[in-house]
View 1 (cartoon, rainbow, N blue to C red):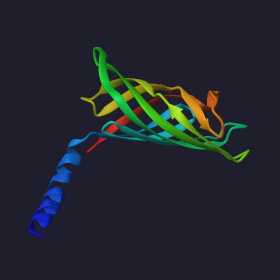
View 2 (view 1 turned 90 degrees about the horizontal axis):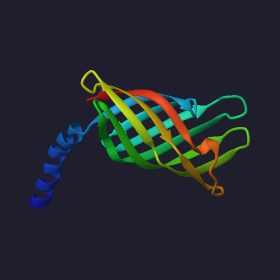
View 3 (view 1 turned 90 degrees about the vertical axis):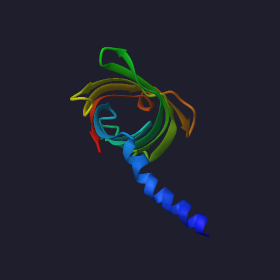
Length: 149
């Protein structure tokens, strides 16, 4: 019993130190879909957004894991490659679809990495309701993130 209590106490003491050592970023992206908010935690990226252009009107969410994270290309310019999933709900036709994507990005850090400007393209493949490669399944953005501690 004492070993279990010690083990749980050790996890509770060490977990905040491990979590705080990870990089966390929050930001905004503009492109296709129109607007997205993004939260990055270490190599994970969560996005949520909408597209309310005429005839579209959908919300979406995505989760991706960055396999190659901020690999230097030239000078401070870096690139990343990931793998992810997405889901989208279109209001006009009450359509729900989901699929997989491959986020590819170029990042440029400013102010010692506090601010990061980026461009991202995420070609996607819809899996449900039927497999298809469409314009709506591909995302592209310009955006910026800030590091949060």
